[in-house]
Length: 111
Ligand SMILES: [Zn+2]
Image (cartoon, rainbow, N blue to C red):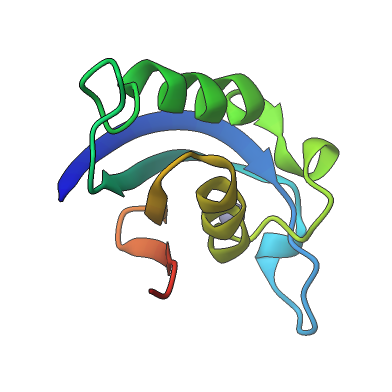
């Protein structure tokens, strides 16, 4: 089994829809650290699990310097973003979304 791990930083804003009062309901920004984990039993014809550049393109081209509420159709919590990314990246089984120092959400596919 092969594993690749890609870590990226993006800047993006969001505003959360919550069932309780919170300052997170106001539009605000983070420098997000996104870590993507992919694995495969066999390598592709290029000798890779997946190209690091393709992961970076998908994450940065869609999310970097954006208002996440404008481009995502769901409440853009760190948990939901992790799931959304994991579902879109080939061979991905886990995504860590660090919103700020000490605050990380992880989505993992169940086997
Ligand atoms: Zn936030």
